Amino acid sequence: MQYEQQNEGHIHEYEMFFLNFQTHNLLLNVLTKTVVTIYIFTGDNKVVEPDPLSEGFTGYAECNMEHFVFEFFLNYVRRIKSDSDWRKLLKKNPEKPFLLFVTPSDIAFVLSLIKNGMDMWDQSRRLQENPTLHEIKALPLFTKGEGRKRESGRTVWNNEGLNFYYTAEKNWKKVYNNKEELSDMCNKWERWEPDDKGRKKPVKTFWRRIEEEKNNIGEDENNESWWEKETNLGYDSGSDCEPDFDWDDDVKKGKSYDDNSA
Image 1 (cartoon, one colour):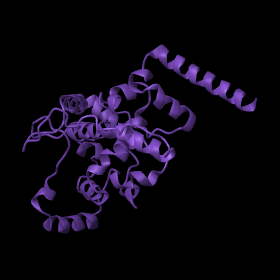
Image 2 (cartoon, one colour):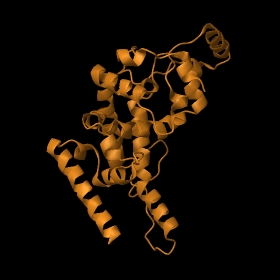
Image 3 (spheres, helix red, strand yellow):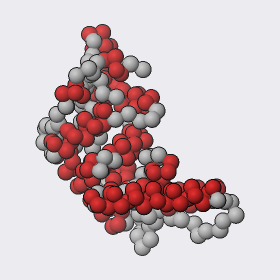
Image 4 (tube, helix red, strand yellow):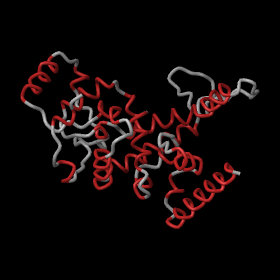
């Protein structure tokens, strides 16, 4: 009886949650019912949904679900470099956020890899939980190689995978080319903190360098290879300029070098 009452309460909460958001027609545009259900009952916002994430940032911002995007950046996109490389890069570029060093191509590539392997990972998890299950072996979504002869220099990704990648890249280019949207994303990223704040430390924005730190970095730069000396800022739309954004006053105020101490 107790569990039936709990289930009824959960069902009602679930239905009311969707009813409220369906009124605004926002949340269901960026999150599937599965993700929202997990979020409601467990608070887990680390679930990755490649399709809505491939559409950009606006949809998440409109329904105050930016933390799904930021968890994706922190848990997956961040891995394109080592933590030590991120620290070095951000120290050399104070007052510039981690997101400015991520490109639409990076985002699209990571999303493509996740979407390509999701069926295999889900199957692996099911079989670990229930070894007696018998299923046909899951295959990658985009790189099965069906109907394709392997040739040197040619991609093994099918048209569906290439379409997903280039569409995602195009959508995120729009974000990085829109000063207002990029500013909104960068400022919200700066204010946001994960449950375990330590996870964000390697990609924290550095707000001020003391003279000693400048000298140390200068010595390190003399020993770097040319590819490490490149600023390598994020998407620049083919020009010589970096993506344009503005910090909000409340974000800049109170920020100091001490905020980035390990």
